Image (cartoon, rainbow, N blue to C red):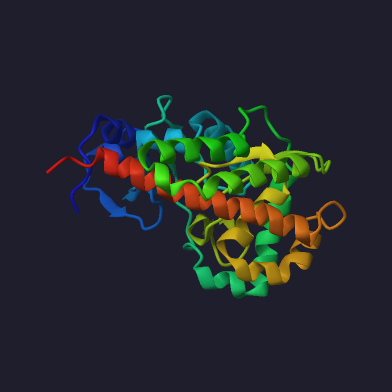
Length: 276
């Protein structure tokens, strides 16, 4: 495998325990992740992860300072991998490698695994929430549509009413009175690690906001989870403050956000592609 040849990679390697010893490195490109490159490195001092960041993801709603602070809070509580180095310029992140392997999409059909994930989420949502820059979903949706319209005007006419409806729903959700807490914000199966009590990786879209957001994200990515919605609300401590219709409405917003995100990503990559 050809290794990256960049200053960010070299600086990241300098933060990996044992990588500067001169011994050959065991490096593996990890699957998952659509906008970054992630590598597992094994050295004489353990296994570690280096994630190299594409600059354009900052325009997709990522805030590296927010990510590092919230990831660090979750790691301190034993819910995430330990951070070894977070580049001040946001070019890379070095973390401890978590053994156990990522979930598969089918794991969300397993009730025992869902309830284990609910315990992780309830513990996460109970942590003291640090002060971080907010993630404004309504503004992010509108930014996505504006950028898509600039490059493909005909593709967004059907999106404008959806974004307007999402803004109204988000305003109503904000009036529900659920205390803001740390949320992961991107609960794809590849970001959930371990067969027992699962841990969480890839905190790029972590935020301090409504705890219902994490369950909505799950339902948006894995619609079958809605069949367990009532029990998930109960196990996450939200049964008295959130309803199944609210959960489904918020999941719809995350489906729209995911659709727009992938369209923006495709446009960003097309813009970066060299001309023939």
